[in-house]
Image (cartoon, rainbow, N blue to C red; front, side, top):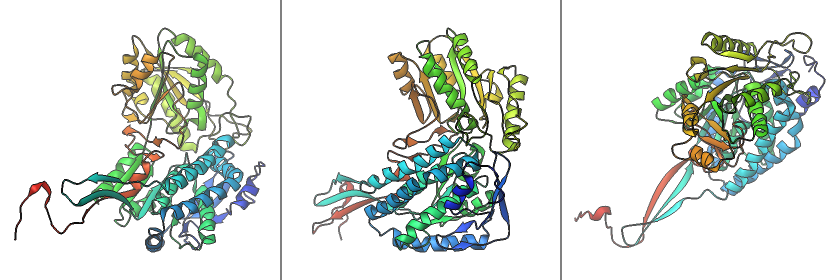
Length: 517
């Protein structure tokens, strides 16, 4: 990889993952298709060109769907525990390749190396979860109102699951979907973000090896690449019954409308505008750790990143000082250097969004108390490094009401009891993650009650960012309502069927209806 000059084992990692300077971008497994149009993948770490990926054509997409459809016929009748064994082997390959894949995630996306390793660990964890789940795809048995009848429900695979993922978690979100979809008997077509296409190439290489070693058909895992136009090939395709899409709320509304028009199913994981409530009974040290990581981790580019800190007026100045002091200790630089806390934004468009947010908050009457800046000079040549900023603001500001995918934290003040804080917390269009810092049991339970947080994730004494795979992940309102990963999220990848068996010689009708011939 002569284009890569960074010396953190990147070239070795790329070679181990089978990623080259020029990659075919469409795959049905062992077969890769070629096209003329390409995507260029530049690292936000140093601006270097990592490699090129060919864009999927309409003709190649058709081959992908046909191959996936054929593979589904074999995969769906394979016993679920046997499908689980394939996922187990995939998890073992991820364990073997955790370091190189983590480095690629860090280098192509810009998150810290530790976060890159953590993302691959999420993949491993969901594989472990799915293996156990492959023996627990339970239905229910119900009592029939008719004598001599048995009723039960069971779940069947849907077919092709289309996955559209975002750049900020370039491998983990795909694995959340595929690991569950595979054990459910579905086959998958994945369109990774055009900003992180090489991560998709690497993952497809890994699963292709597993499928080939087990003599399984092409099409169980397929890859397509390109911009929204390639995504539209799936969203408009009636042969793809479920589309799982991760991205902005704007994108999600388009996907939901398109898929809904053909009466398909959508699983949407969209924007967040996440808040931590800091009550008078909060542990300040814990609050600082949770808030700072939530705000600056992944350079503020997580859907669960902390955007708002809602602080009680009685401790506002104390918390404000502690947060500002913590920001002074942040080290910004190459994310592969584990001494650094904050890496780059994904690209210069994200930098413009960051700059616009800071400008807008001041125009609306807010005060920037930790100045932001675009960093230049040695080590910052990509133009994607920025200083995490803090602003005092009002929840009603238009810029505060929107998600800024960058390290900008808004401090908000509340007075009175916890009800007022919860009202501020819920007073945005998004509903993904939320948290309260308090040692007051009544406040904590009130926050988690029916009239508390309206988010899909609500935490006590931990931050908004970071979720375990055992619980279903997702949010409400403009976050889309989808659920991925743990709990019973598997059900969205299957169709439910109710069955009634009559084992008598009579044919009684339900509700006592008489129909004699």
